[in-house]
Length: 332
Ligand code: PBG
Image 1 (cartoon, protein in one colour):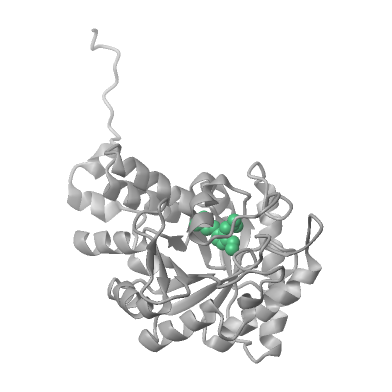
Image 2 (cartoon, rainbow, N blue to C red; image 1 turned 120 degrees about the vertical axis):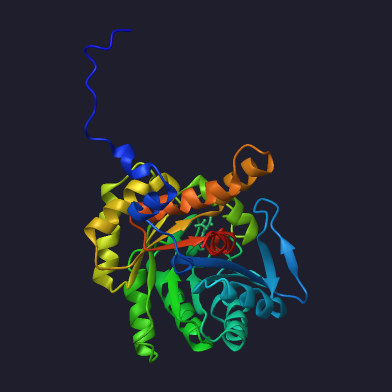
């Protein structure tokens, strides 16, 4: 090999990677426990701590388990949880969704009694409560948009009455943010923020969640309301509408296959806090590979969450929240 024609570099990016100390100084993205929102599945019964097979480490909890679970979450400095309820019975409207003694309403009160400073976000959607499993009211095989809005508003008000801090509509109905805003304002909750699942795709990565929350559609799919994974520009239209309707937070979901969408949404709406949902299938992939010894689980978790934040997310809803918060604590 001839040495003559190979220029010696004078500019060397590697200089800033030579020691852990310098690497730490030039690190652009830092995760903290304050970035995380931890999903909790709540169910009827007593002493229930029911594991979700496709989501190792995640459980459905009965109300009596929530004090202990939220004490752990709080001790890890995680600021917020998002609640999903499994109702006692399902019907075409999803009556338990907005019942004063519904499972989520009970959970909100129990968590607020145990951990008053833990922020309680509630998912507002019909799919876990309806017998057909759809995110809206159904007529024949059509998912009705406008008739669903009143149910969403009533559910949000019911969560607010129970003491929730933030409502998060996830059903991708047109006008859902405006409907919920009007409902909350009319009921005296003008100060309650709305975290809108503004940009939510019809994704295969929700599979394990549908086991966890028992919310799979009994016929058809969600493609008439959730977005086509092929579309990026449409995400900005969805986000713009939700901003106009009064959303206080935006969300992109899922996260990993949509890092470009997270970046574009953040750049288009820099002033709104942006959440990304690191969904069940994304969690299951890491858990399955780690269980087989195919990757280093701890590193994969931190790399994944760091990438979501680097892409532009201010907050990450993640089933890894507890383990990631622990790792951040251990790493100092
Ligand atoms: C709907 C809802 C879903 C998820 C959160 N809210 C399921 C769906 O839209 O089918 C998925 C979350 C996950 O996969 O972790 N209420």
